[in-house]
Amino acid sequence: IILSSAFPLIKETAAILLQMVPKGVNMEELMSKLSAVPGISSVHEVHIWELVSGKIIATLHIKYPKDRGYQDASTKIREIFHSAGIHNVTIQFENVDLKEPLEQKDLLLLCNSPCISKSCA
Image (tube, rainbow, N blue to C red; front, side):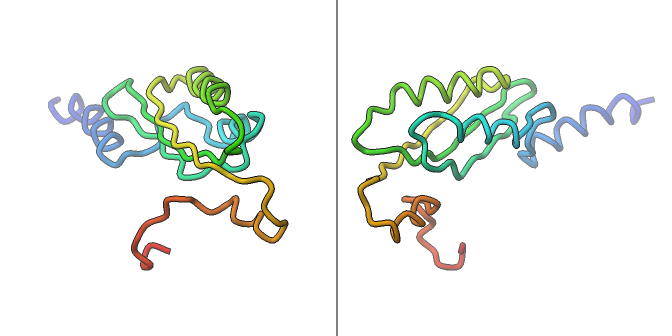
């Protein structure tokens, strides 16, 4: 009897401790909506996890043109997460100079704040 009542609690605790993407969060749909926000060049380092039961948290890095204000994009991104049930979002905007030569455009996919250790790559 104890084991049958403890199993759901163990399962929920394991999901939280392993920092798994919570059930009900569709990452593909979320990423496509984020990529459609005007001005966004790249979305990377997206992490979504459940801190406690029912409290979902997200962090992400966004490449955005440095000559444009990011407040409108921030509001739109928060609305996208809010509609997915994620209310605590930390966004790190990384400035991009869109006047760079074409060969530099591949750098849009790279993070401006990569790990300092080469072994992470």
